[in-house]
Image (cartoon, rainbow, N blue to C red; front, top):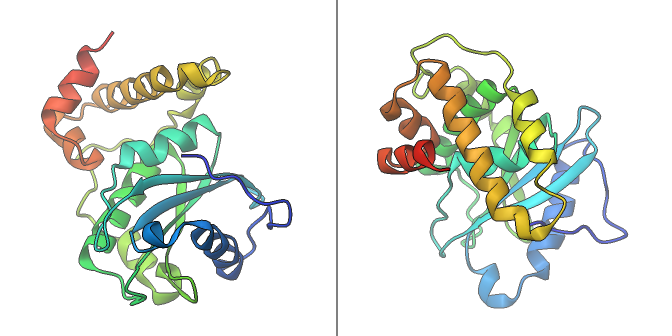
Length: 219
């Protein structure tokens, strides 16, 4: 779900305080019930730090929120973002990253590398405060992680063909679902062309092998 900025909200990011300033306002706009659930947002930016979009990727429970890397980067490709920041809230207001938080960040870093889209930080927020993975040194640690690095050597850009498909599909809301399907198919086929197995694709995109096969066989 696309999040609209208010007319007085800042439109570019210079640091983590700017991210928190924008996102805390967005969180406070939620009703009381939804504030008690975990949200996962992505801010997409250009190289100058101008905000291209803010997307609510998933809304979870009071303790967790499920994230699929495919959904995170599909929007980034469509919006022509070169850098993204992940943000999620902890309703408990305890801002310590969990192992699950670290794991999804690791996945997003690796998928972003394949697509040449940099995940520059991951913030955990409450309505009053925040914690930055970058400030904690966790981004440096996870950027050096080998847990989700594919066995093949492939870092070529795949943005051009994805953007070509995307720009022809986003002119109307009625094409949104078809656009998502096309982007998913291109992403999976790109990874297949780089000699990744279905099992490897399912692992790095955090989806099932059945879902990968369904995407491959879709019209």
